[in-house]
Length: 363
Image (cartoon, rainbow, N blue to C red; front, side, top):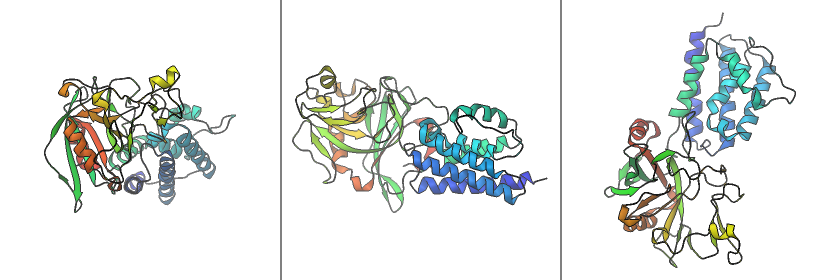
């Protein structure tokens, strides 16, 4: 009989190494479905190789079937891509010879995932695999190594509408805070996990259009829109002076959802007028984009128009999901960030920040 303890020890170490390599190499983000497909396949290969080395029998035909499932599920279904551990587990289980044969008329298809799960749930190494994928998805993520500028936002809790902001730069490999902290406002209902660079917890509820919550996580920032002809900024930072022809689409049914458009004519239809970027509202006279649910990996209805912008009524009002602050600080951030340094925005409630800081290597 195969030595399961040897399998356990060797698999735990090697799978952790695989996840770390893909995460720190920049191949796997929450929005990078192709990266997840590659990582899940690599995880499955690693498990199969160790199984063979330790005397656990595997079936090559089932391996091929499992790989086909991995490739299909991680390129077609964004939820499965974000929860690649479950896909890997399914692939590994399929390769084990003690499972009954699985096939469908349509070939490999996600509809068969639940029956497969019921087959593997009583396997003696299920607990091991669950712990392995948990380690891979939660601990392997770190801030992109090329990112050396970061705006950090920490809220008291998930339902807080207030946030404490600070700015950091990485020098000699260590994050250093530049200047002091300042206050900001969040969504009227607090925070919720967003679609950014980070892996979200399995089963977590994610931001939806109109939910009144600010997306939590790790996001690229950049791109500035404003009412003025020009603003003080880094030469490489995109800036656009807003005109009546400029739209930001919040219609989840549109193929341009959560995208900036400029019309070739004055807005005529009700849809065009509704999507117009605001010009007569001071808090929206200057804004910087926060890349939540951003192109090219946009999920319809997953939340749109998330920006840094000027706060309303001197901070007395919460937002629909953006992060707002005093104008002086917003202008300073716009003038400071350099697109070449891959600036980030990290927004988390205090409990998650304290837990994830050493794991994600946060400032």
